[in-house]
Length: 302
Image (cartoon, rainbow, N blue to C red; front, side, top):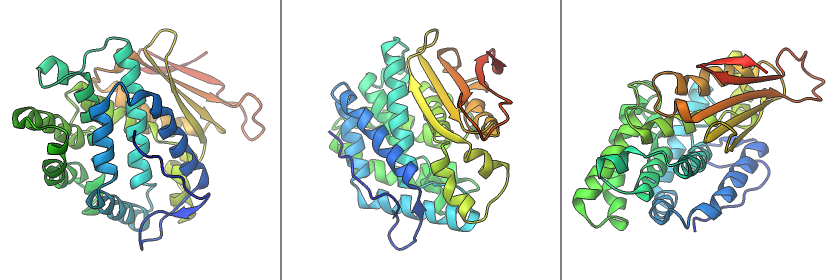
């Protein structure tokens, strides 16, 4: 099983670059990874992919430098190791719910592999999707795919001895990395899921560093309005993503970061519902929003 590293309450995660993460964010990482423990037995190749990438010093160095450039130079939120692991963890949780609903991924449709291989593709793409930020934010998707290529060629033989299968799965990973930010659009189930999972990491813990560094705008303020993101099986959809807000300003973060990844032709749109809610006992909000649910691509009050 993949190891879950315990972290202090507030820590510097990157070697020598002093990027401090909020305690809520590191706690969320631990909770998310703990939720994966029961799932790894179903997806042993995905578990091996997780171990190979998270334990690799080159991958960790890529995370560190991507985080350094985005946080300290652009005042963006976390784009390093914690973000990568949270996105990958959420992606596995979503994948498992879709698998239970018998949604067939493109890796299976194409004949490149089975459901476990599809999950391994998603894990790899999620863990590597943002490493291109170490060169520049602009074009980081294509740069990330290029930087990931030698890493995948070095590590994937540990899991896949068959060259043809390995190259086919590598193609799915690289496509998902390049299209994770919808530029260009994802064309596969796996890429769409990576993009969606990337949009689920929107809690206030991730946005705290950018705000503390002086970025005060709708992006940073709305990020601080998100308390929790919960992924579960829905009553009418295989996947229901519930976003709990402490303030109605969080609706901007939800629409700008999460919702847009379902609206632009995503094959996941029919299978995923998003619910946005404020705390029922909230005293810090004027209760502009109580509960919204997704209907035909738009939020409607319930």
